[in-house]
Length: 212
Image (spheres, one colour):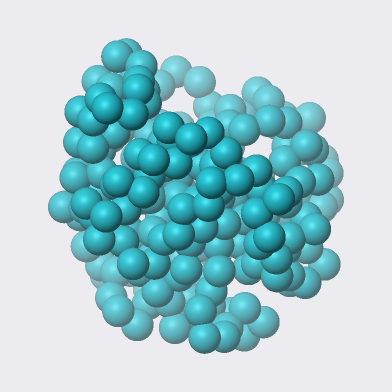
């Protein structure tokens, strides 16, 4: 849990890499951005029916959690998860902190954001995270178990970019405002989980699509 607070402090207080977040968002970085970033983790644990002893998913995470969490078709030496357009590190840094046995790739073409994420990675000693300073299409990443993005483009555009790099049986996850994806509610290829965040009026959604 301490690393989540440390990451939040780095994003809000670090200035040498430019303005990573607006002053308005700085005031609610934990309740808005960190909480939102952890929604995919909570979803995965819930959907795979993992028993959680505590209401705090981070406090209850054990070293062998990922061994139990990975379904048979995804289970191999290391689960590989790429985040497209990682920006200043949400959701990929909170997810990497929460799931230390997953290998994460933060893919981001903007130089200053890449410099910040490499700086934060070293400060937090996240050995399971690799920062890739390229566009996702030219990153060379392939055969991935999970690909995520957060408020990047439309769902359709994000899926089109992600699908070629997903392994068969892999999962694409994206975090959007609910209004931007409400037209997908009757699409049988996608799953939608609607949720709210503290002190936010609008509804949000986790949208997933499997690569069959």
